[in-house]
Image 1 (cartoon, rainbow, N blue to C red):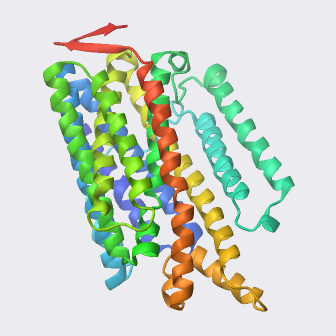
Image 2 (image 1 turned 120 degrees about the horizontal axis):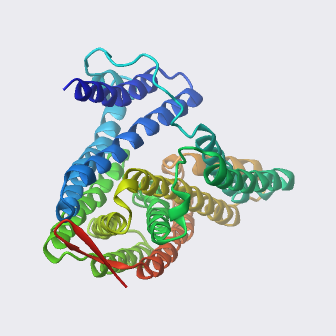
Image 3 (image 1 turned 180 degrees about the vertical axis):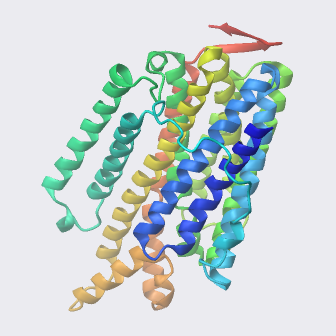
Length: 429
């Protein structure tokens, strides 16, 4: 019981500490640091939940319980953004921070936990590689070509390659407890990781623009635009539960995964086609369909990974799968946001009147790019121009997601299928 008290305390610290730091932040840098701390704690909790499920639940029940876990997770994610937006607009964004502080037991565990088992060098190299890649994408997609620097671009490209190669070398030859199982990456497990990377690259690249789209195109308030995420999150929850019951009943997952990926691609196409001129309330529910496909795909991928991975390697493989998932969530929004912003800025520069007022037009463009609600203060003609140009630029996001979805379908189809029979995984061609 003492170990569980310690775990409960640590879980509470993972939530309370970053929330407290966020509440007292006095600058964007401090707030970004708080978000990093929150991400580290949150990632650990998500991975540990999956590890516990695979460790204590019979194989034929894993999909179902993973669906339950995803449902609870998504309920929290669904309620969080609208509630946070509502509190921020009414009582301020700092005041809700103390509300998340819950008293916990005093730390009775070891005062000096060992860091020898943490692959610090690999973690640092991976973080720097992702950061360099994000800055590189942002540099290449700068709205104003005059702001681009060939020297900076080359330096970021070199840094991305160097840190990526360095991470691979560290994991392969130096780390005693590598972040990723390098020996398994070239086989079936590597395909599962690439599948997760592609799924969440496309999904993240599209959903990160959902709120700006609804604000710029449909003039939804922040709270209303945040509520739009609820449908997607509920779709993921429902998809996970449906997939869990189907896997439990049929003892198979590959056909389910292929169908789920096709459903996601269909949802991307619907968004690309239906959202060209704006979207109605009904059309704004299409992300729910996308969430359904994503939830089913994640469950199928997770079951496939556990089915084809050695039992003694499951914990590190689960963490690695979550790592690739989150890398997709970083890379996808970085690419999609940067490209859409560049296309949007170019369209505004070509459409807004600039006769004798280039400085004013430049100020308007910068204001529109940096504030989704800035256009609401413009005249009707300028509002129409901003709306039309954003609709044009937004088309990249669903098409980018379609490309990622098709690539996901190819990689997933190349994986081996496995049938679940009792507590035994039977791998088939």
